[in-house]
Length: 365
Image 1 (cartoon, rainbow, N blue to C red):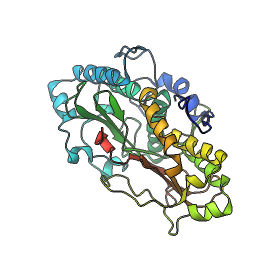
Image 2 (spheres, rainbow, N blue to C red):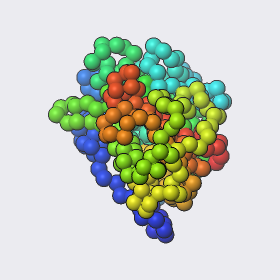
Image 3 (cartoon, helix red, strand yellow):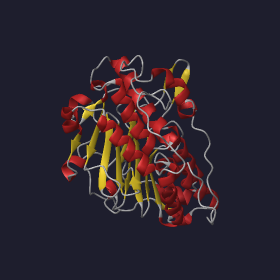
Image 4 (cartoon, rainbow, N blue to C red):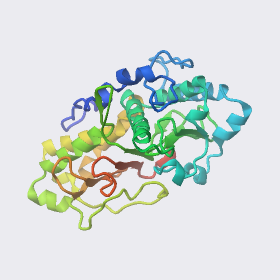
């Protein structure tokens, strides 16, 4: 993640390493490159051994690298596959994503386990170009968890390679187009408008929330969890009373199928926060913005800091760490929601969403 601007007037948050989940994810999963079996984890980590690569350079922008990666991927496909993976950029197509497992939702595009190793490597190169290292590793952690879920349940509704790639609109350096990558508990919407990029809306979920492979513990949404507890536990009694929602909330509201909807501001306004509390809240917000590549995330982080006083933090559930909770962060720029699925595994099953006000799918760019 890029540091916040040097001319920032409020203290900048620092990022402590995630739990072993993401800081070691690449090293731990590199042996699984291009494997399609759940035993091999299907999803892979960033590596130089992929059979399809995109040249990365300091001079190239993230947008141009993403465009090059998409074109490289399309060049690996047959004409039938190209027809399957590409579609017009209509609202109906943009909205065709879900956190539901395979058996409960029909997705479009090409699924990873139907592709050759070269084609799968090309898909991953797209994600590597568009996302930060942290964001890419987070996607790896989420998809790997679905392989763990398959192993524990035996259900073919889950799998680390049960994720779809779809391209909406015509990839170009000037127009607006979207790359969608998702499946159970993941929907990444990468929209490019010229050199501008956004991930809104993106749904991050995970089940199980924590797991161990080869002696290494993984927790893909550790930061989004721990930093929220840090914020709520820093509040005084008056602030906490304002933050806690009047009605219990146990699921994200602006998830799949909710495009175009908004929520009224609720909770405690950050204008009442101390300097230390603002730092904690900004660190939490950065956790949600930093999956986008550093170049594009920088301006979003700067705007988040500039609008921090107009940002609201809302809470439902216990304030004790490791308890099922729901929280929401609302800024003039974005809405964040996070919810433990309390009737489906306590804290081991998470749904979360990041949306940008007026700019989902790059509508405002």
